[in-house]
Structure formats: C-alpha cells, structure tokens
Length: 573
Image (tube, rainbow, N blue to C red; front, side, top):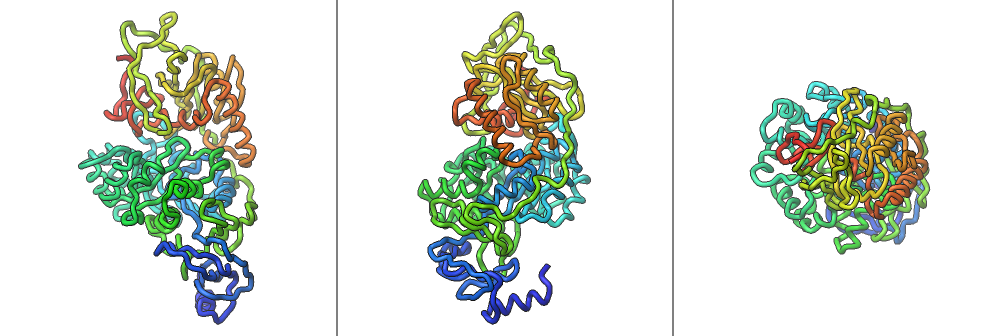
C-alpha cells in the first residue's frame, strides 16, 4: 500500500534529491510507448519506478550493454494445463521472465466448481508472480458433456469482488451468444462495459459482429491471418497463441502491422510443462518472432504494455515513472530468457537461478475423480452392416479436427481399431458423478501402433479419455487413473508402462516441476515405443478431443458431438 510518507519519498527520489533503493545503471531501456531504446538509469523506490535518467541508489547494478524490458505478460493461459500447482508454476515462469499472467481457471472449475475457484485464488496469494483471473464463463462449455459442476451467473458474481478477478473468461458458447441464450446473457451482463475474453474459432461476418456487440472484447482462437485481421478490424484484441497443441503465432504475425500491432497480445493458452521447460513461455514466442524477421520492439510491446492496457491495468507493462518495477534484464535481442528478473523492485532471478522459493502448494485440492466400475463390456462397439463410421481426424499442430467417413474394421461383429489406417478406438468415461456414461468413437492421427494412452486432462469437463489399439490396454490405462485419482498413463500388453498421477482435481500434481517433467519424459518415451513420432504431443492432442466447442467433430461422455451443428450425432452413417 502506498501511504503518504512513501509518496513524498517517491517524489524526492524521482527528483534526484534522495537515493533510490535500486538503480539499474546505463542499460538500454526499452520504451513500451514509442518502441525506442534509451541508454539511461532506471531508479526504483520500493516497488515502483521513480524515474528514467541519471540516478544514484543504495544498491546499484552496472547494466552497460544489457537490454532492460518490462516483465513479460501472458494474456491468456490455463494454469492447470501445465500440470503444476500454481506456486510451483510461478517458479518456472519467473525464470522465463514472465511476471504476470491472466488465467482462466475453467479447468478446475469444471471439476470442483466454486471450491476449485476459491482454492486457486488462495494458492496464488503473496507470490512474486501476479496472477489475475478471468471468471470461467462456460462451466460446462456445453450441454453435450457432463462436468463436475455447473456455474451460473449467480455463482460467479461474488468472485467479481476479488481484486485479482478482472472480468469474464473466454466465452466458448458462441452459439449461446448469437442466439441470446438467457443464461449466457446473464453472465455477459455481469461485466457489461467491462472485460470479457472471447473464444470464437472461425467466427466471421455478421456472426462476428453479433459476438462482439454482445460484449466480447478479445479472441485467442484465430488460426489464419485472414481471421486475425478481421477480428482486429472489428475492434477485437487479438491474442496470438503459441500453445502445445496449437501453433498459430507465425501464421497470425502475417496480419500484424505497425498500424495495428498495439491491438495484439501474446498468449500461451494451454502449454505443457515439458515444453515450458525446454522452450519457454512468452520469451519463446519473442524468440520465434525475432528469428522470423519481425521487429523486437513491436513484439515486446505485444508481450508487455498491450496486454496491460487490454486488461485496463494502469502502471504496468512499461518502464516509466510510477510504473510497477517489474524488470527483465536481457543480454541480447535474440534470446529473451533474462539474466536478471526484478519483481516489485526485488531481484527474484539472477543468472538463471531463482532467488524465491516456496512449497509447491499451500494445501492440496480435492481429487474430484468418481468413476463407475470399469469393465471391458463398456468399450464394445457393435458393428452395423453396410454403414460407415464417423471418424475424428486430427489436424497436425492445431486443435481443430476434421470429420471423416470411413469403412470400419469389424472383427467378430465388433468395430475395432485399425492401425493400418491409423484409426483408433476412443472412449470418454464420465468421472465426476459415477453416472456410468461412456462415449465411444474413433480417431485418426494419434499414430499408435500398439497399446493405449489415457488421461483425466480432457478439456473442458475433464472426464477420463482413453485411446488405444485394443480394449484390454485401454481398460488397463483407464483403471490405473481411476486408482490414482487422475493423471496420464500409457499401457501396453496389460501393464502400465508409465504414469503421472495428477491428484489435484485430476489436473495437477503437487510435486516439484523436476519430478513432473521426469514423469512426462517417461510417458513420451513409451508413446514413442508405441509408434508415436517425435514432435507429436499425443497427450496434448488427446486432451482436446473431448472439447465440443472447437470444430468440427469431438467425443464426450454423451457421444459424438457435431460442433458445426452444436448437437450430438450418431457414430454410424
């Protein structure tokens, strides 16, 4: 809290009448407002930048030849997708120069409801990472699946009083918006004139006009530059995404120009831990952009000030008087992993070493895994003579899917997996209320030649999803996750070969990042043994096959979902 005494001292420091607490001397200071670099000192008083110029401080660092930027901001992400508890994730993000994130906790909300929201708010208190939240607008995303909770407007409203809750999260039920669904409109009314994130894959023309007119003000689902520029032209903030399963950054950068770039932000959306460790976060996106010839200055604005302004957070995202002293120190403008990170004026990273430590969590989250007894009979798909099956076809490096009609492989009157055509059986078991619901279908593109993979990370209702070449291994993998209370597993020849328990809502581990990453490497090793090629993150792809708000065909615990028609559909045609 800035009291009157601090304000007076801040003025004296800014005028050079009193030493600053910290001075970063003689560095190349990035100006987020103009895109310029200025050789100057940065003076810090408490948690605030007092001035840019020539200063003396109680603590001084020589920054000659270094590049000083604001801390990076991630405009849209899901903490749960990293599989780390929030405090452990903070350690990793700070090493990558990310000092603030804007998270939509709809993953844990779909499993645990308001209990999950309260848990994640409490877990993100008092950290050197600013975690702001957008309230989950679609729990569940649609009525075509079974979630662990249902959150209507009345349940969300009390959370808007929290100082780190800024608005309404991604509005995935875009048909509900377009047709004026009463429940959807009540949620939009909660933040009328405020901030509402969008989720409108492929929305265009008059539908886009209606979607934005309803109060949506951003979108992170654009996959082509044409879609991106249309959304910018209609007044939308465009969040350029580089996620584990959706690599859209380079495509969308084609629509970014010096005239429109200030309406663009950077977002990681759903990014797995192993890629955060090996590649990075927003810093990785900056490296991609610079490598492909885009100006570092424009990209840095997108990673800092643009995001702060999009969320109406004044005094963030720039190195300027009165702004929060969140500062990254870079050695060059090709590698954006910082040498030093200062958060609120305090050094938290030095030479790649984290200076802040915390336990991975303050208290565990509930498990939220309640699956009815599993047996092989629930995986059987009886053949229907002279009919084709509707197959979910994976689109490489995207979370979009295609719908295909294929002739099934039938053995003993059952439709089964056909590895010769890369068509695998897919099942989704409801895991919240022990309803016994099982959705059955087929998927093409996972590349498994043997065994099965299963996960309780299955957007957005996070039921248990399993794909495999045979029913026995599918059942083995699913049963292992039921026993563990959630996680990711690989099974082969009736044995669990690798497993990562995720006991927090079936989404997150309570372990250190090093443990989780080792388990992920084991899982990746075994999927490679099953035939998955290098570069295909089969678990990330699997996790989106049950999401009935991304075109075109999905599978939920209630059956196949035709996203274009926003309705359930039969397997046979």
